[in-house]
Image (tube, rainbow, N blue to C red):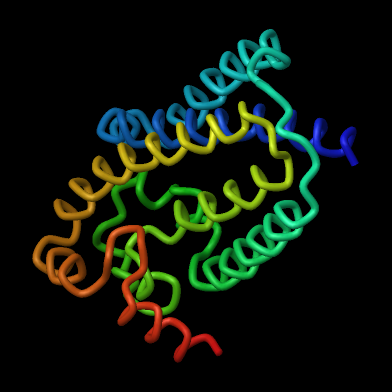
Length: 204
């Protein structure tokens, strides 16, 4: 069990920084990528991710932090939470085609052809992709139970909050009053009781 937790921790320590790097590269320079084209944006992100991966691998054991031990109840809870994130992610993927899920329509500035989605996962919160990742990260961290993984989870939450603020401003510029109305009706990242009831009614 301890060896499994170590390898799962390695996966988290490598993958999470790559996810953060991708979305920061994507949104911080969205205007530039729309001018230069999607291939330039994805190429830049790939180079940045490769650099981050190299730096992480160099300090992997240091980043791991203290092993907080085996805790069956914690691990089982983590598996349940992670399974919940997979279920939610599956619902989300049903609503998005590959181009939208990968951000290609955003890079191309396809505001004239892309509709604002307000039902299903997008009726629960305005940024369900980030919510799915964060839920899964929390569950994964509970299974790993290493101090460094909890630290990366907190860093991920902070990074996603920053990305969301950038994305919100961009979405307001693309959809205008329709997005402002959406902001009033649906919470940003943490579901409300009303949005949760609506989501469960639509999906169950």
